[in-house]
Length: 357
Image (cartoon, rainbow, N blue to C red; front, side):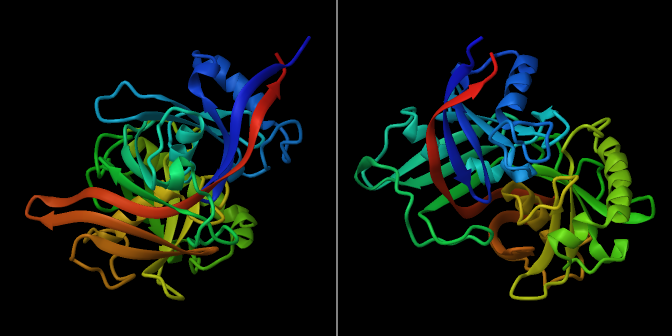
């Protein structure tokens, strides 16, 4: 029986990579789609040896594009997180790093007409409802991938892609503070549960007896910590109205600590069963919002600013990530209006991906 051939782009977006598909080339039914994506990535083996995954959660991500029927958006971006080994596909979250390559991919696929210098692409993240304006470099009407922008976690430099996230609060749960509190205590750990671009449960590293400056490898080897963290995450998921999250990658989990280098503060981010090698774009927005909210678990970790918009530098295992948050803090409480970041993307390959029919 012949294999099924599916047109695709293989792209790096931020510090993640994976296949980018035209949604119309894939099954509509989500169970059928999941089966196809599991085969495409090679989920079920630690090296994804029978697919194009890279053996890590940041390299088993899938982006699917289609022209949007939304009055505001140009492109609908549907995201899938495929498990490395467990053959599970999660459609609940979105991925901001992969989103970096949505604008370039939409132009490459012919869904967007490029401008002569830059091209603005309005993207709706279908999974969460977030609205993102992406500005892509297109000199002469061609996507430019080479440039001088550098992001920690990716070697070399590339052309910048500017991202401006709108309507980031409450996308997954309907509330900025899904539990109704700036702090909750779960299993003896104080946490802040927020939903800004991504629902995240955040705690101070020292609450787990950690410094918050451990390497990715050190954290991944700490099975005792992961077991305790997962117990807190599961209970937090219920408290956030997300139900049983044992088979879901959301809510994510993050540890915060004082800065050690040039950052505003330090963070370690979990996907959630592995330590992120850098920091997720969506997660960074939620962590930054937590740091700016008076009364959160970030109190005392840095010199909080009340000036908006605020530019923060978050230390992660591979360096720094810059994020700008436009917010307000008044008698009505703390509110997040938008978030902005600059990332890079690159087209790695294009052609047909073959999966068993």
